[in-house]
Image 1 (cartoon, helix red, strand yellow):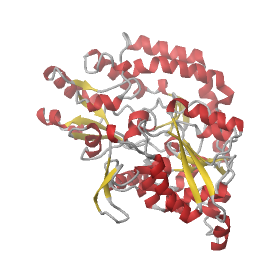
Image 2 (tube, rainbow, N blue to C red):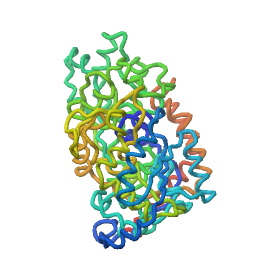
Image 3 (cartoon, rainbow, N blue to C red):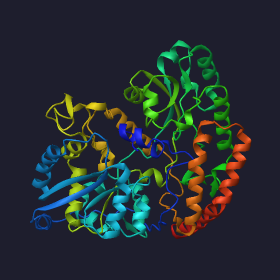
Length: 518
């Protein structure tokens, strides 16, 4: 969500552009986290060497299921052979990755769960192969005891707060990854145009602040579209402070401690009114509502203002690297950390695993051994990446192949230990340090750990989702004939679909959760 190229390309509208309309499915299970002390993490108790040795006596094969990170994935046999040298030598196991195409990924995992098919580890998140639904149907194994016995390196590195997001009814059900939980969002400006028109870009803080610059671009640059917006990816700075997304269309008002429907938030309505005005003035492409590949549009160089590529960098380096031309950025906001932000990537052990202890040992090894995690992520030296400096050290700087030449990638946070990533064109060491700093400084929502159970409003959920699927691209791009009429129609259709009943159910469950988690 993550912050790396494929995730930007495929899910920018999800984890990385999580505004008040998000991609969390309106279903799940409530989390009744019971903590002792300051966190929900298990205590660390180092196992005896004899215990570890006896647990790895027999060679086992371990399976890890994951949505295919990139469509051009190849070289798996050679990369697994290299990784398994480390794995076999450490825990006497062989790993096989099972990549499932996006189109069949979730159906495949549902079928495996329903049939009781044996497998070991699986990728889960709030946006794909949903964590809450899997826990609800009993697909995952509780990990508390396994973590205490074999997860020492995981326990040292996971953000203490993140355990709340994966703890259900007092049991840890997955391992949350290291991720940019509060990814600062920014305005991105094509540098040559910002320089040409003397834009003081650091002074742009809101979507409304853009108006004079967009007007200048429209008047003077006939081959440039002033603002990039697509079917699912919002314009920059559409977030409203002091509200935390709970589920689609519904947020938590941190100041007033209550659940609220986004269409009842004045600033939310104001921001989209501004987008409508920009569309009318020709600042947004006429066909924006049918554009689906945000990154491809940005790379075209035909836009003056964009949103960030998955995280703000003060010098614009991250967007410059991804979009392929010089950019400058202006900080917009840092979201409050909620449950969804900490469930952007996680690893679970299947209840059907025949070797759960070895599966936990493997996950711990990935978190412990930087060579292993980076081999699984980047592939092989000379084939999938080249070393720029620091060859032979634990922390080389590398250049991973990209575009049509890229034949391997597993995003580090899909594996777990993002901060152990080698310096690269995916993320520099400096950008990783900034992400960690952002996490530490970000506010945490009062709802962290709460997961909404949509079972009681299942039919309403389906109807509400259908309305959003139809109407949100129009709202997002401002491409409606009459804004006030469209907004009134959208609100009425959502009411008719059952949105108010869902809001009431969220509030009811949240009140109960708060009472249990004082």
